[in-house]
Amino acid sequence: MWREYRKIEVDEFFVVGVDTAAGGLDYCAAQFLSVTKRDVPIVYHAKQLASEMTPELNRKLVDIYTITGVKPVIAYERNNGGIFELERLARLNKYNQYTIYQTKQDTGTIRGMQLSPKLGWSTDVSTRPVMLADLKEAIDNKLFAFYDRPTLNELLSFVVVQTTNSWKAQAENGMHDDLLMALAIAWQLYQTEVQSYTPKIKVVNPKPAKKEAKEGYMVINDRLQYNFDMSKALRETTKTQGKDWKHQ
Image (cartoon, rainbow, N blue to C red; front, side):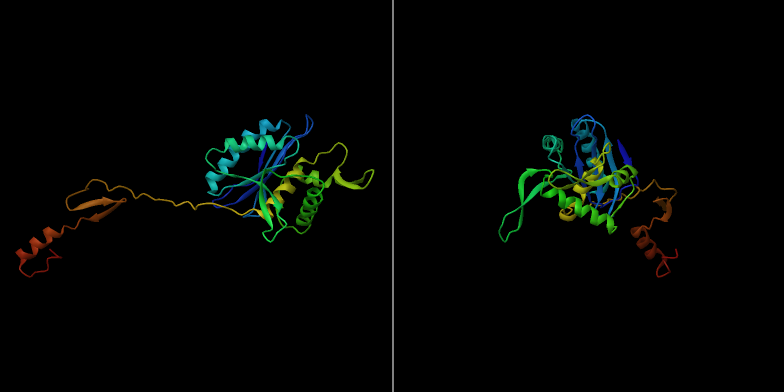
Protein backbone atom coordinates (compact mmCIF):
# COMPACT_ATOMS: atom_id res chain seq x y z
CA MET A 1 0.00 0.00 0.00
CA TRP A 2 2.79 2.44 0.90
CA ARG A 3 5.79 3.38 -1.20
CA GLU A 4 8.26 5.72 0.47
CA TYR A 5 11.35 7.03 -1.31
CA ARG A 6 13.14 9.15 1.29
CA LYS A 7 12.94 10.24 4.92
CA ILE A 8 10.91 13.32 5.67
CA GLU A 9 12.47 16.20 7.58
CA VAL A 10 11.59 18.72 10.27
CA ASP A 11 9.65 21.79 9.00
CA GLU A 12 8.58 20.10 5.73
CA PHE A 13 5.14 21.11 4.49
CA PHE A 14 3.07 18.47 2.67
CA VAL A 15 -0.06 18.69 0.54
CA VAL A 16 -1.89 15.44 -0.23
CA GLY A 17 -4.17 14.70 -3.18
CA VAL A 18 -6.43 11.65 -2.90
CA ASP A 19 -8.38 9.77 -5.57
CA THR A 20 -10.95 7.30 -4.26
CA ALA A 21 -11.89 4.01 -5.91
CA ALA A 22 -15.03 4.05 -8.03
CA GLY A 23 -15.52 0.29 -7.90
CA GLY A 24 -13.95 -3.09 -7.26
CA LEU A 25 -11.43 -2.83 -10.12
CA ASP A 26 -10.19 0.68 -9.25
CA TYR A 27 -7.46 1.71 -6.87
CA CYS A 28 -7.42 4.25 -4.08
CA ALA A 29 -4.42 6.55 -4.46
CA ALA A 30 -2.82 9.36 -2.48
CA GLN A 31 0.18 11.47 -3.51
CA PHE A 32 2.13 13.25 -0.75
CA LEU A 33 3.76 16.29 -2.35
CA SER A 34 6.40 18.16 -0.34
CA VAL A 35 5.96 21.89 -0.96
CA THR A 36 9.29 22.47 0.80
CA LYS A 37 11.35 20.03 -1.29
CA ARG A 38 9.15 20.07 -4.41
CA ASP A 39 9.02 16.29 -4.71
CA VAL A 40 6.69 13.37 -3.99
CA PRO A 41 8.43 11.07 -1.48
CA ILE A 42 5.34 9.15 -0.29
CA VAL A 43 2.65 7.36 -2.33
CA TYR A 44 -0.35 5.36 -1.13
CA HIS A 45 -1.80 2.94 -3.69
CA ALA A 46 -4.14 0.04 -2.95
CA LYS A 47 -7.01 -1.86 -4.55
CA GLN A 48 -9.40 -1.44 -1.66
CA LEU A 49 -12.42 0.51 -0.47
CA ALA A 50 -12.03 4.15 0.48
CA SER A 51 -13.29 3.27 3.97
CA GLU A 52 -10.20 1.07 4.41
CA MET A 53 -7.89 3.79 3.15
CA THR A 54 -9.07 6.56 5.49
CA PRO A 55 -7.61 5.22 8.78
CA GLU A 56 -4.33 4.48 6.96
CA LEU A 57 -4.08 8.07 5.74
CA ASN A 58 -5.00 9.39 9.19
CA ARG A 59 -2.09 7.52 10.76
CA LYS A 60 0.36 8.75 8.12
CA LEU A 61 -0.78 12.38 8.46
CA VAL A 62 -0.31 12.23 12.23
CA ASP A 63 3.17 10.72 11.76
CA ILE A 64 4.10 13.50 9.34
CA TYR A 65 2.94 16.20 11.76
CA THR A 66 4.86 14.54 14.61
CA ILE A 67 8.09 14.57 12.60
CA THR A 68 7.79 17.88 10.76
CA GLY A 69 5.88 20.05 13.22
CA VAL A 70 3.87 21.33 10.22
CA LYS A 71 0.22 20.49 9.55
CA PRO A 72 -0.18 18.78 6.16
CA VAL A 73 -3.18 19.70 3.99
CA ILE A 74 -5.24 16.89 2.44
CA ALA A 75 -8.00 16.87 -0.19
CA TYR A 76 -10.05 13.87 -1.27
CA GLU A 77 -11.76 14.05 -4.62
CA ARG A 78 -15.42 14.61 -3.74
CA ASN A 79 -16.61 12.17 -6.46
CA ASN A 80 -17.16 8.44 -5.86
CA GLY A 81 -18.12 8.88 -2.20
CA GLY A 82 -14.95 10.77 -1.37
CA ILE A 83 -16.87 13.47 0.48
CA PHE A 84 -18.25 10.95 2.99
CA GLU A 85 -14.78 9.59 3.70
CA LEU A 86 -13.40 13.10 4.05
CA GLU A 87 -16.03 13.87 6.67
CA ARG A 88 -15.02 10.66 8.44
CA LEU A 89 -11.38 11.73 8.27
CA ALA A 90 -12.35 15.05 9.86
CA ARG A 91 -13.80 13.12 12.82
CA LEU A 92 -10.56 11.15 13.18
CA ASN A 93 -8.56 14.39 13.30
CA LYS A 94 -9.32 14.85 17.01
CA TYR A 95 -6.20 16.85 17.87
CA ASN A 96 -6.17 19.04 14.74
CA GLN A 97 -2.86 17.63 13.48
CA TYR A 98 -3.63 18.22 9.80
CA THR A 99 -5.84 20.47 7.70
CA ILE A 100 -8.67 19.27 5.48
CA TYR A 101 -8.96 21.27 2.27
CA GLN A 102 -12.04 23.40 1.74
CA THR A 103 -13.21 24.11 -1.80
CA LYS A 104 -12.54 27.69 -2.87
CA GLN A 105 -15.13 29.69 -4.78
CA ASP A 106 -15.04 32.99 -6.64
CA THR A 107 -17.16 35.56 -4.85
CA GLY A 108 -17.44 37.72 -7.97
CA THR A 109 -16.30 40.75 -5.98
CA ILE A 110 -12.99 42.45 -5.17
CA ARG A 111 -12.57 39.89 -2.37
CA GLY A 112 -11.80 37.28 -5.04
CA MET A 113 -11.59 33.66 -3.87
CA GLN A 114 -13.20 32.60 -0.62
CA LEU A 115 -13.49 29.35 1.29
CA SER A 116 -16.74 27.48 0.84
CA PRO A 117 -18.24 25.08 3.41
CA LYS A 118 -17.53 22.18 1.02
CA LEU A 119 -14.71 19.83 2.00
CA GLY A 120 -12.48 18.25 -0.64
CA TRP A 121 -11.64 18.79 -4.28
CA SER A 122 -14.39 18.87 -6.93
CA THR A 123 -13.39 17.33 -10.26
CA ASP A 124 -15.92 18.37 -12.90
CA VAL A 125 -16.14 19.57 -16.51
CA SER A 126 -14.67 22.95 -15.55
CA THR A 127 -11.89 21.91 -13.15
CA ARG A 128 -10.71 18.68 -14.84
CA PRO A 129 -9.17 20.25 -17.99
CA VAL A 130 -7.45 22.93 -15.91
CA MET A 131 -5.92 20.55 -13.36
CA LEU A 132 -4.68 18.18 -16.09
CA ALA A 133 -3.21 21.06 -18.11
CA ASP A 134 -1.50 22.46 -14.98
CA LEU A 135 -0.02 19.04 -14.17
CA LYS A 136 1.29 18.59 -17.74
CA GLU A 137 2.91 22.02 -17.66
CA ALA A 138 4.53 21.30 -14.28
CA ILE A 139 5.96 17.98 -15.49
CA ASP A 140 7.11 19.40 -18.84
CA ASN A 141 8.94 22.22 -17.02
CA LYS A 142 10.29 19.92 -14.29
CA LEU A 143 8.73 21.98 -11.51
CA PHE A 144 8.76 19.03 -9.10
CA ALA A 145 10.26 15.55 -8.87
CA PHE A 146 8.57 12.18 -8.40
CA TYR A 147 10.13 8.74 -8.04
CA ASP A 148 7.20 6.36 -8.39
CA ARG A 149 7.28 4.10 -11.46
CA PRO A 150 3.56 3.16 -11.35
CA THR A 151 2.80 6.90 -11.47
CA LEU A 152 5.10 7.24 -14.49
CA ASN A 153 3.34 4.32 -16.20
CA GLU A 154 -0.04 6.02 -15.75
CA LEU A 155 1.32 9.29 -17.16
CA LEU A 156 2.67 7.48 -20.22
CA SER A 157 -0.63 5.68 -20.85
CA PHE A 158 -2.82 8.76 -20.49
CA VAL A 159 -4.05 9.71 -23.95
CA VAL A 160 -6.49 12.01 -25.70
CA VAL A 161 -9.38 10.16 -27.36
CA GLN A 162 -12.29 11.33 -29.46
CA THR A 163 -15.76 11.12 -27.90
CA THR A 164 -19.15 11.74 -29.47
CA ASN A 165 -18.96 15.51 -29.10
CA SER A 166 -15.33 16.34 -28.36
CA TRP A 167 -11.91 15.10 -27.34
CA LYS A 168 -11.14 13.83 -23.85
CA ALA A 169 -7.94 12.98 -21.98
CA GLN A 170 -8.21 9.62 -20.23
CA ALA A 171 -6.39 6.37 -19.50
CA GLU A 172 -5.94 3.86 -22.30
CA ASN A 173 -8.16 0.77 -22.27
CA GLY A 174 -7.12 -1.56 -19.48
CA MET A 175 -5.05 1.13 -17.71
CA HIS A 176 -5.76 3.32 -14.68
CA ASP A 177 -5.46 7.01 -13.86
CA ASP A 178 -5.89 6.98 -10.05
CA LEU A 179 -2.29 7.98 -9.30
CA LEU A 180 -2.35 10.63 -12.02
CA MET A 181 -5.55 12.26 -10.74
CA ALA A 182 -4.30 12.21 -7.15
CA LEU A 183 -1.11 13.92 -8.32
CA ALA A 184 -3.12 16.53 -10.24
CA ILE A 185 -5.09 17.35 -7.08
CA ALA A 186 -1.88 17.58 -5.04
CA TRP A 187 -0.41 20.01 -7.59
CA GLN A 188 -3.49 22.23 -7.33
CA LEU A 189 -3.03 22.32 -3.54
CA TYR A 190 0.66 23.12 -4.02
CA GLN A 191 -0.35 26.31 -5.80
CA THR A 192 -2.88 27.54 -3.23
CA GLU A 193 -2.14 26.18 0.25
CA VAL A 194 0.13 27.86 2.81
CA GLN A 195 1.77 26.07 5.70
CA SER A 196 0.58 26.77 9.22
CA TYR A 197 2.65 25.57 12.16
CA THR A 198 4.28 26.41 15.46
CA PRO A 199 8.05 25.81 15.42
CA LYS A 200 9.16 23.12 17.83
CA ILE A 201 11.51 24.24 20.62
CA LYS A 202 14.02 21.64 21.67
CA VAL A 203 14.88 21.67 25.37
CA VAL A 204 18.21 20.07 26.16
CA ASN A 205 18.48 19.01 29.79
CA PRO A 206 22.04 19.18 31.16
CA LYS A 207 23.40 16.10 32.86
CA PRO A 208 22.87 16.23 36.64
CA ALA A 209 25.95 16.85 38.77
CA LYS A 210 27.38 13.67 40.19
CA LYS A 211 28.48 13.18 43.77
CA GLU A 212 31.81 14.69 44.76
CA ALA A 213 34.68 12.63 43.46
CA LYS A 214 36.96 13.75 46.29
CA GLU A 215 37.29 16.58 48.76
CA GLY A 216 37.32 19.97 47.06
CA TYR A 217 36.31 18.61 43.65
CA MET A 218 33.11 17.49 41.96
CA VAL A 219 32.17 15.98 38.61
CA ILE A 220 29.90 18.09 36.35
CA ASN A 221 28.91 16.78 32.91
CA ASP A 222 31.65 14.12 33.09
CA ARG A 223 34.42 16.68 33.72
CA LEU A 224 36.41 17.07 36.95
CA GLN A 225 36.14 20.65 38.19
CA TYR A 226 37.49 22.38 41.31
CA ASN A 227 34.74 23.19 43.79
CA PHE A 228 35.70 26.75 44.74
CA ASP A 229 34.50 27.65 48.25
CA MET A 230 34.41 31.46 48.65
CA SER A 231 33.85 31.46 52.43
CA LYS A 232 36.80 29.13 52.97
CA ALA A 233 38.96 31.32 50.74
CA LEU A 234 38.15 34.41 52.81
CA ARG A 235 39.09 32.61 56.02
CA GLU A 236 42.40 31.57 54.51
CA THR A 237 43.02 35.18 53.43
CA THR A 238 42.79 36.33 57.06
CA LYS A 239 45.21 33.63 58.24
CA THR A 240 47.87 34.28 55.62
CA GLN A 241 47.78 38.06 56.28
CA GLY A 242 48.29 39.30 52.78
CA LYS A 243 49.81 36.20 51.24
CA ASP A 244 48.46 34.97 47.92
CA TRP A 245 45.35 33.24 49.21
CA LYS A 246 44.40 32.08 45.71
CA HIS A 247 47.65 30.15 45.55
CA GLN A 248 47.02 28.79 49.05
